[in-house]
Length: 274
Image (cartoon, rainbow, N blue to C red; front, side, top):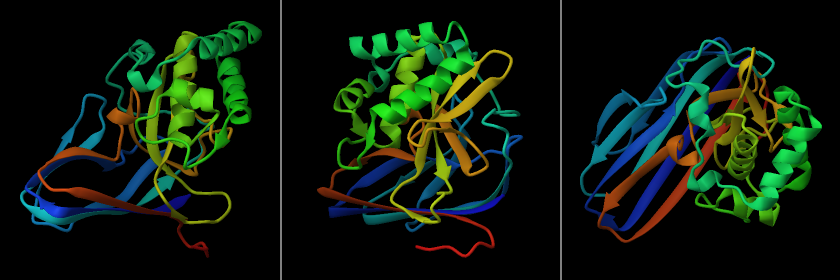
């Protein structure tokens, strides 16, 4: 499948900021299920853009700029994807799976989550893949998708208790429960071609990957109750959202910050609706 992706992020500062530094994790890498045909980043301001790889192997761009009242980051490209049944192959792995048993403040768990995870682990009798599929379906039933219920700093335990959130929260809860049950899991940021034909989206997508012996890393999207397919474009990984966020940084001075994000994901050659 050939997917066309555009991602626009606009910041406005009132009054203008004295300067800012942004780390962009918005560029995908190729692997067995994903080939980057073309990709580019354009920045509205006269800024320096340095490319690096972070500790997880994500392609990052460090953006530095001086005084500014607004900033727009436009990313677009074409990705060729292939369905691998959710199994990740051919990716650059920098760490052993055991690193992804490490908890973070965003992927903490409470006693209810621990019981939830341990009960599912016991029911699946040591079958890690069966546990992950059961966790996927149970979380989909437990949660309600609600864009107003949480924010980027919401923890897994808070969202689990509230029984609502967005794809970031579903991913964090899946990761927290998997780690609690002894299964390495990590956060993935990227894009999804929606099944309903809508190409315009308010943000990118997020899901989790869990490590299964003899298979390796497998993608689980609890917000949609499915394993990843060729409708998914994988951008960055991390222990949680903070280490895989598309844009993360700091500014100096300035007043109110206004942020607008617009994403489009479409299949090449398909007639789509906005």
